[in-house]
Image (cartoon, rainbow, N blue to C red):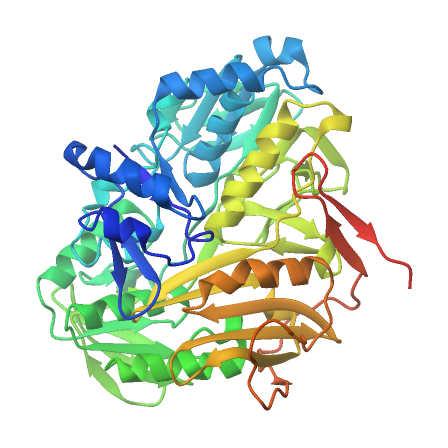
Length: 535
């Protein structure tokens, strides 16, 4: 059986770890959950009990075709759908990772029985990426055992191992690398991102230099770490880089992290919380070097041997991981006429793609990491999010809208949520902290690595970050949705005696010029709307 835990929902109650300890385990002293996504069949009963006992129902299982088919029959009776299109329409999904697979499942769930084609450039079935930087590197799970649930239950023509190379909007065709074309009535673009490579091709080709995005990447890095290298170099202290450094210390491997910025995670969480992350690195034994760049990687006989840094120092290293962020896979859309660029494909809140003139295309939809969509809560600016939870929720909205009438379509208004497990700490974020100008610790203790930090902009709450305090995330999400004031005044919990906001310490970057006064109403997607408040 296959499973995945929606860690955006998990609150660290650990019921699963009590009931199936060989499948689920709490990492460190806090709420960091690791799990086996492909447990053996003899664990089925224990896993089913764990899923039933989860207070927030965060465990998703591969239930099989029978149950999915039954649900589909019920979903097909929903109002607002084109009955003829449900039966005879042709839908093509380009991208066979999390968003693409989730959308395919949602289409069948909602009653679409027409032609469904899923195109993916990787030859394997859809798989979950978060375990690649954690469970796989620790040797607990093999890369092949990270498949997503429900893939076998989806009736589709899976074109795996062949990339899309072009899009003919007028002719409604997708061109493939094998020189074939696939016609469509409606198209979903979910091609996501790829790892940004080390910029020097010759240095990137050295044996021992890795990026981390695919199963192949993860397998190569896992084998190199298992060989006990003398020192690992991690270039970049974002979330992926920090997670790799954490795994190295779990494996008792010497590791140096080189970060050009002033602290780890500073672009996502700001300088104040970045300083906390830096302390975590150093407390775990990481050689953290900030404000420094890697000038060159050098090798002997094709194998990495050393790195030269911008401060003139040299490191002897056997393995280097370039954790430099992602590049959105939009090249295949060149000349298509869509509004596609380095930040992805622009779309409206209903996931419909914009063309280069800013006009909505009724038959082309976008979901996942490649989507760039407006968020009413944050000044209607277009957000490009590389978050697991966003890929899931946006794919489900896109799938619904592809087979629904205009009046029955949903807006994608989910507040961004993401998580990272590193150094035994579960870090979670809700909202968009990076647009904040101030931050304040509202609960808990920074020294104990168990706290909540609230982020504000112009007197309004725009984000929150928790360290081993997951149960508070939903509360802060509701506060963000209703446009709560900042700093928050909480009357139901104890707060530190001296609550004084301080500058959040984000690097200079584009921010909204003004904020819309908006609240989100409704909880079912059918009635969830943004409502402007009178000034």
